[in-house]
Image (cartoon, rainbow, N blue to C red):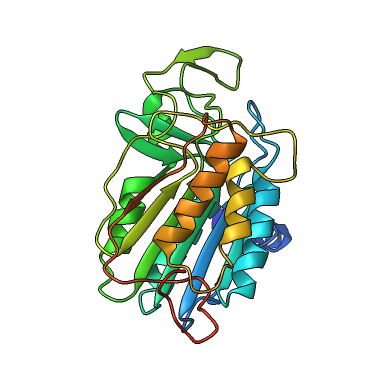
Length: 281
């Protein structure tokens, strides 16, 4: 009888202790659903990653903030993501793909580090900490997969702008958290990829080349000229990007050549002309 009472008292004590401990633990914050894209006809995801531990960049945050502001003026429902880690980046892109299926135009702008590994392009979160090429691939955003999922939408068109060909720290040797060096087979710049139907894909420079993260201004060379031309009224996307390419070529003295891969079937203007036209000038 004594043993049964002792066991019962011990069980009550442990249960009470567990309850108090659980109550003292702060509740894990649930991810707040953001449905700002739902129902909007023009939507944009704007990402600026600059705070990398081993290879910080100067301009991406400024580029993303300026791009977000300009897209709002053009009537886009935007979400701005700054210095995003892998989990947040992955979940935000997932939300974007799910919530924008009925949009007339979907636009993604990315400024930050990108890498070409085994012929595929990856966009890097700022918390990337890897021990091998495989880990880089697993914890970075695969551009081809995003394009493929965007291309499955039968409604609307897609625009993906990657100012991600900046001096690539992963093209030769990268440091791990404990200071060890890893040799990569990755090549400089990003790889040429095919845009799916209904998609315009734009790079800040041509495949296999890099663009400097210029220290002479608040924005990268490419984004500076993109911001200047994207609000021109009545100018279709193809012509707008051509104007950007001409200006970047001139200012870089032919060293940086912006490049596009387009597969659009209709003319589309970020800003319509005074009479509602989109036919070029």
